Image 1: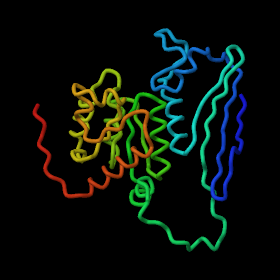
Image 2: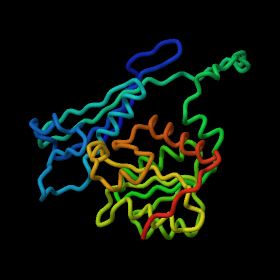
Image 3: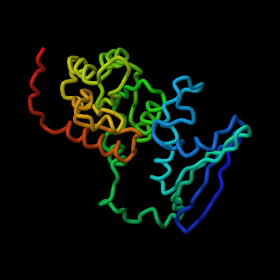
Length: 254
């Protein structure tokens, strides 16, 4: 496997970089290439496929690249290997010491910055059975200096909530053999979690389904593939609301 990074364009204050990963694997058939960057799609989507995964990794990569002003793509030759690439526009660091005291535009501070400034070291729980989704959300939250614990199923989540006090919980609403609404109800029964914000993570098509009990049980719904900007805006809203006076929440009927 070969990794490459090349400068594609450069201005006074930014640089566009292309990153590539080249392998010498089995390659990808031409008819499968057009599907690779679609959510929940893989080169082999059959029930007996040889390789695992959710089909979200490349879509997430593409979305992150677009958020950085770039793009993502791939090329492949069956039997010889593939090349996967993405580009990103990166702002140059101002090294001039005369700029240290330059005024800052405080009117445009992004949600991630505010989360980092106000809630650094806050403990957050991410509950997701899929390792790729779990890793993506965990890395994003850690980049804002949050303390992140992860759980792979309902039992792990309940055990962790008994051991720690979390400011916010991210919960995959489509985990195997369990309804998201049931998990939330069990968490609410643990002391101190009646008002804790739960951000439900779900595929976009399922989030719009009126019969989806998991999505209906949460106020904050984050669709997958996860948009980093939406994640931090939703997290900031949940954390800010948590600090406001809370109305009594009626107990659920048995």
